[in-house]
Image (cartoon, rainbow over all chains, first blue to last red; front, side, top):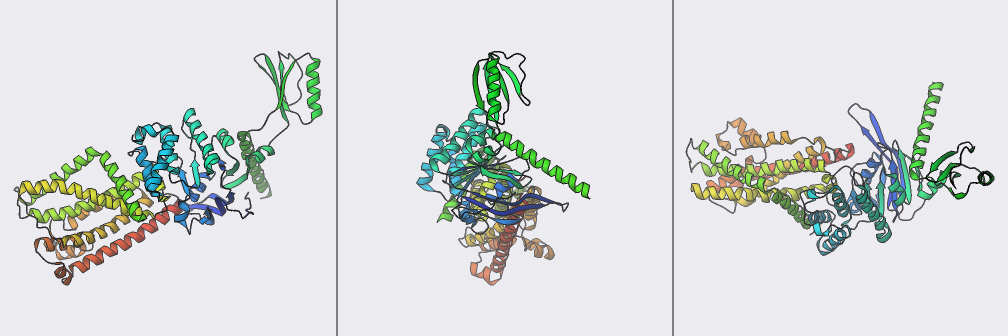
Length: 334
Length: 261
């Protein structure tokens, strides 16, 4: 699925019909990204999700100008990466997955100075920005220590600071919380939120930690085998998968109460919890009345909201089933 | 101005890293001194022949520049590909080749320091007389231009193939023996001397020896074709190196192998 780009307002990132085909020695073609079109509005966290091998990292690297697309165009803040590479690179800061991104032999301060220089940022503005970033990340006291002596979380914070030191409009974070402990991951997460809220940066985030994506992203694109499965605002996406799914809590043990089809009943402490799909209000009222009739005290009734992980799994599985059906058809017609 | 600042940025980073490896630096200084003493002893048939030493010293010094610039540039590029900092370098608004020139300049400066200290001490200890001529400076710079071009070819190969260290090692050893560093090209058989002149460094060393030890002026070396051949050789290496580096860069970006190791 590709989504068309209709609006002409200034976009942070725009990909038009981008494909990347690798030709390996066996002459076999690997279509890592297939005719991908998407637009990223400025000042938001854009989640780029997908299973391993979906084409996320290839897409991120194409946006960063590190991989040349086979076809299609990519513009960053209006600059075409192929034709205006220098200007486009000036708009981007990135922390890539699985690599250090920083020089371990240098101190945090020197890493920031070097990273700023790489982005044409020098002198007092660079020093001021570096100090501000190191203070915000609680690394100021250790600014002169070599990075190799830092914990994984601290190294990642320095990598993110390096990506931001030149004050780019767009920050690409590929698995920024990978391998971090809970506390470090939370700091990084809070910081990403702050970047968008206070500095109006555009953040492109890829992560397998879907709870983090759900907390941070305003817009989500899900990829599978190089193609887009969906690309829409997070709320809209969750709405698509919202079911009339309820949880009813009553005080005490409900005993051998007959539950409707699809319902589960569990004992949690001094409460009995009924969970299941209720498609109309009448059925909900009927169940509540029955519970009253049994003399059970109603503690709470609430609708269960779908989370991004469920949506993601649903979409990936649906697509996989669809493809299996298509495959079966093609075999039966062959 | 910005280009100068970015070159300074690269030089500063390189120096910080060199300084962080102080022990290695010390070992390199001792290696230079040992090789120099050993070679002088060998060429002097077991004695320090102060007449042989200056010719060898000059050739060896130029080769040492080549060794540092070629090996370190390609090695560090491979290390950076592994560490992920190479991709950060490619996300700079500057061309990677500009940044590489900054790195090579840093290596030239560090090689100069590495050479000056032990060679200076040995000159004093062995009472070796090397006449210094200002005319040697432009010739050395022209020689280094060719060396930069040659190093760009190696760096390009690193971007595509990654593991080229053994090949780089082979090349720098070939240069030690074939570029007339220890023994002048005039002592080589004609056919070998002709081949050697096509290598980087060889012609530079020939002209440097003419200026330093035969008191020839720049004008004389131009008139005998020495400088012309050096300039042609260096410019060709620079152009071919630049072109091949760009091609390799493009190939690596098409293959998506820039940051892979």
